Length: 262
Figure: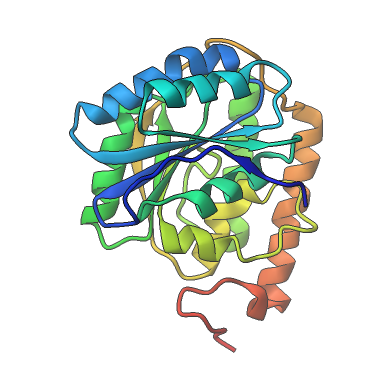
């Protein structure tokens, strides 16, 4: 396991008022220059107590330097650094473990999501009797092939697992922190990207999920590192692997009540 380098700040301990925005970033310098201030200002405007945990996942551009500078400017920003690129699942896991809030919000750093949608999602999670609130993208601004792929995989997961989630790969979702940590007790070995099946895993484990509409925009800068041909095979592999686990290895699932239904 690569050593995690962290630059932290003193903050109050975990409490019911503080929530953590988890922002994995790989070569997102151009987007983060404006996204970080926008995120901080949008949540400050609602007078909510939060921290922005930004994970530099071994970026080759100036992402690491930028988030350190932003931490000096904004007291809510906490930069974490992976010495090398470990992938989105590992970056999310790092953020969840480091979070000090009782709620963790996954917020992707490609600037396709609106920071102003974060406070309503947190409020919904606190008010409703659910464990996760997923942001369902409205007017999705991706290229046609991305939208078709997403629709197919959402339908495939619904058929295989009987889930009601309609946007499994949304980059804006909120978890109760204990739920996020429990989901990540599952060994990711053998999955190409466990984050892609995280909500299905949550459903199989007995957690309640609500969906709310969120805005979605075209990518402003940088480029996606997703190869559409390879990602199809990798996602299909992960869905099938999870289906096998759900059928034969229920004792390995991070069940809500801590035990198998066997």
